[in-house]
Length: 185
Image (cartoon, rainbow, N blue to C red; front, side, top):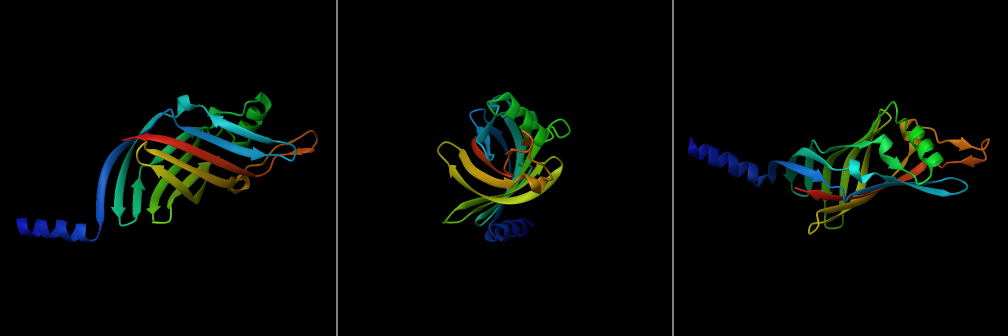
């Protein structure tokens, strides 16, 4: 019976699968910014780092260059952004429908690590609509730092950009979400 158990473990390891449960904490040193532009100017909204510190329980399954994640879900408060100008901040929260949808949810599904690059496959849920993206990321193992940039169109989430001054100022539908996360395991 003991020999069968050893054979099963050997077979599983030979296929390259390992599964672990871990806790990951996103520290308040982390930064999330959203950049956009209008036909007149650019804007940058920074996420309040006091809201960042979360601990999540993640199930990790490794298979060769692919890491499958379960539970790597990050909830970002829609009202947690500051665009350095009251009117822009108010308009930004209005675009996100922050009152009806208090969180932007990012669910990291898998990480692919090849010699050329690292990509993360994630689902982003904004205003109740979920879309899948593959994002190139960098990882610094010495500092447990993950950086990346996600470009998206707000129309993908059925959101409308505001028009100001009788339509003379129009916000572009494309935005960049930049993240610089510091993790603790």
